[in-house]
Figure 1 (cartoon, each protein chain N blue to C red):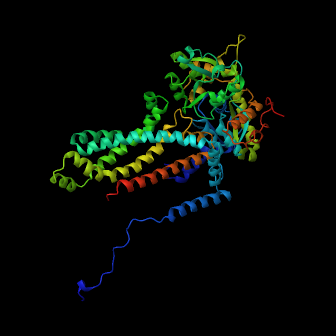
Figure 2 (cartoon, chains in turn red, cyan; figure 1 turned 135 degrees about the horizontal axis):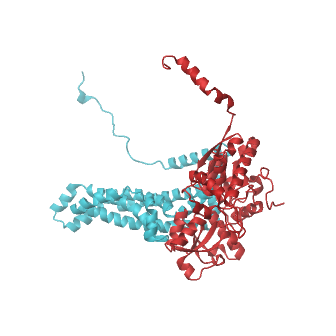
Figure 3 (cartoon, rainbow over the protein chains, first blue to last red; figure 1 turned 120 degrees about the vertical axis):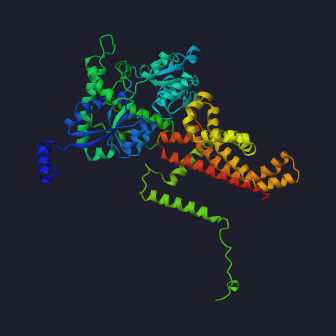
Length: 343
Length: 264
């Protein structure tokens, strides 16, 4: 019938769609680039629970497989926002004026195991038991200028050994780092909790300490393209509000502790598992979440001074251009109560 | 109708003569660099996406001043030269055997054809298991990459030695050994040297892949680190170094060709 009466068909379609056309609020399309890790969970939660929709934001999440790519996507305006860890590459990109840091993601917090120092079986048996003794050891890292490199740099500063005395072996990826340690080709490596615990349970490595026991720092951030911060401030404010709701849910579900200081993973965490299973790669189980859910400030507050310190360290190593200034790429106005703000 | 045999024919044998204009490549390079620099100066090329040649020169200069340049080039050259020599010796030997002996050819050709297309970079994790993350795995990556094209070029070079030359040598009563060393080897040399041009380029390409794992010095490691750090000027500087190295090797090969192929 509809074939014979095309006008009737159009009328019919309009009648069906009319309520939708009238009721739909104009939502702004926004893109974020991210890694499929648990550290991106607040974004996933806020999207799945409709916090972005409530702010009038239609969020498209683009998944990448390296921190570098996440930052590049924002710098090249392929994405409006990005959420990932700091790297030397990030600071160099930010220094070109393409990015603005607006809120916090993961950080090392006392009592929350996140990244571990792992010694090879052989080095451990030979007496390598403390992160203070990295001098003279060979260490697998992903790349020069990665967060693992910076972890070693902080240790060197704190325990007064020369970073040059550590033989750094860049092997490009975490699986390669694990292989190099398991194969006995390096004395140590630095790994996220789930990878470190896997090596230990396989018997090929020994965890000799956690980063939060030695050095506290801001690992990851939410950032936006300078263009959107300049031209669409209200949109960025709405985005940060939705992100903070996701953060609050995440903190309530995964960061709560009982009176003995043990992590409690309860009802709220179970309720969020479907969201994580949908977005996080490889697919997490409640047990991996228990060890891999890292600390994030529930309101997205940054450890500001640490970012200044990180930049200064990368610059001292000659990995980041000397002309880059932290104050130029951090915008503190979107989140209240940032910590350690340098005067 | 005039007699076609009597119409004068103009000389048509000109052109198609290989020669070189020494100034042409320099002018072309200068022109490209000038355009690039002015595009950067005018702001058509944002430095985030493409640094100006002058920035690249500055990066190279900085490397030269703090002495890292020589360290990187030295480390890479050691890997390239040893990998290339190993791969070439093995490749030329096998290629020769395949060109001369029927059995070697019938076994070698399908095996080489099967293994040649395997991307050596994909085998890197395997090389790490076999050779560790030290120098051997890097040399092996380059040697293997060089080996296959060398086999193919040496084999076809031997195959293309004119049969009548070999028959003539036989009719003069030369021993097989003499034929191999006095006729086949020089006759195959042009083809083998042409193969070297390709295999040296492959060695330069593979040095970047070889230095992905566990290398803190070397041009490849430098290029990779610059990429990871988004230091685009240094990245381009490393690429320029590689291409200068390629030009040098090509010049060296031209000299070798002149010496080895003097009999032509």
